[in-house]
Amino acid sequence: MAYNTVLQQGRFTSDGSNRRLAIRSDVDWIEVYNYTTIGTNQNPGEGYYYKWFRGFAAGDALEMVNTDGAATLEMDKLGAGGGGFTLINDATQPLLSASVATTAATDATQPVVSTANTSGLAVGSVVRLSNTANATSLNGIDFEIDNIVASTSFRVRYAMSRSPGVAGGAGNYRIVNRDPLYYPRRRYIADISQAVQAVITCTVSHGFTVGQAVRFIVPQVNDGTMTEIDGLQGNIVAVTASTITVDIDSSAFTAFNFPRPADYPFTAPQVVPIGEDTATALANSVNILADATENQGILGMELGAGANGPAGENNDVIYWIAGKSFSVDNQ
Image (cartoon, rainbow, N blue to C red; front, side, top):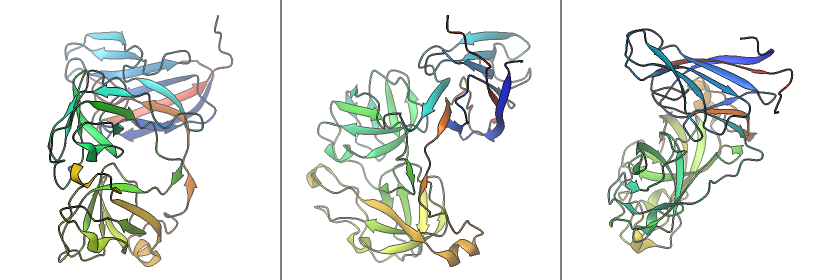
């Protein structure tokens, strides 16, 4: 493996989503080992070793596959857009991808969006819908997705408090390539519970931490919603990937209603970070500077997820090593 200078190496446990690695000096090669799938008793067709060299197309990779669950190994080429490796530079990367046509969206709390083009999508990708006919309340909001059926459809990952009220027609989606550069970021709200400590479900994985102080924007909709929480400030006391629990008693508030087409145009409900509650952070052994404004743009590599992606599947243990070559001959 003498590709000259090793710049960085590391490991992580996959959560089934694409993984972004911040790697200094703009690498020329990277190797990834899926420690979980290495061996002779794993599921046939699962990859365990991946390789990328500068010059590969975005999403391309060389993949070593266990083809029969025994000892037969095969090297495959994923090809452009294949969910392999993609160089990223947040300073130059457009926030949104090119627009892709959709044909329908189901009337469900986790709408399934039909499209003939799912290229570049993976579990955990964030999309922004636009021009969706009929189900107009879905437009302009960022949604994390799962359950991707190649060249057929994808599903909104985190359930809204209620369905859009009508099936969507033709429209468009764009992949949100990255978060805004500066943390912390506002997030759209899919649902708010009525509880002694309100639980807020965001439309994407939020990245907030315990101890952060947040304010709510929940405008009135035609058939009522939890406007009592509008403008209130609370401290985050618990988190999951998509939810935050705050010290606001919403048990007597009106039920939260995700907007529907009859509410259009409307201001989408949002949770906005505004600071840090030091006492809560200290009590939970959380960094008291978690609210600090930080440029989180990176130069690095995005690893595609899945059984045949270098970021692996949920709970896969991944090791990686990356480096810079002395010279790169492009002849």
